[in-house]
Image 1 (cartoon, helix red, strand yellow):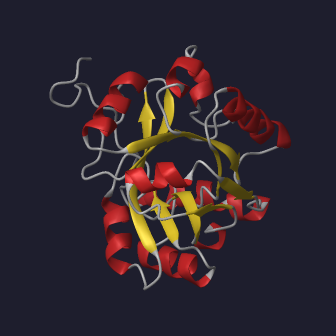
Image 2 (cartoon, rainbow, N blue to C red):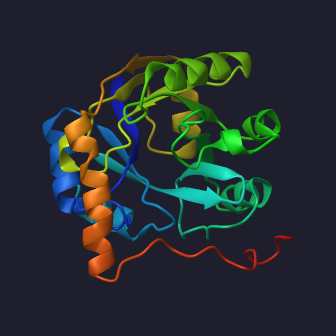
Length: 236
């Protein structure tokens, strides 16, 4: 059975989005997605709201875009948020301890906290489950081209994602798989055979992000500060 999944999407729980979780899941269902990962920055609050509000036919996966000391990671199937600021290695350990799975978002995006900042990028990639081979918000063609090539070199599945920060962007890019990606095991099995459906967020839509940051800052909402200590049992 075909599944239509977007594994990277933000809601107003993120410091740089104004999209209510309820509006995000409605848009996803209306546009034909069957699985949507809500991956707010360093929080899972929006994902939990989205899961409660998801209409029939749409499964919401609780996830998080985690700002590690080495760059960003996407974690899915979380029960609790993983704090930002840990090393990539410790972040991966914390996600695995919850039974979660991980991917590297926009690895060669020059303008965001990409894993390219990590001099041990290949070592980090060897510990994750997929690479974003196409991210609709990457500016310019080379970032996605390099990501797709890197995924092939690392023998990892490449996925296409919207990285939506507004309702307009939800599902603009997505991945088609066979199977049932509603569990970590099911998702990993489904990612062995993927079809990428790329799309691009327009420049005008991308300008919503700096506007959202200003509005949220005025409301007192800021990015979650990095932690100074690791989760229990994890060395710093």
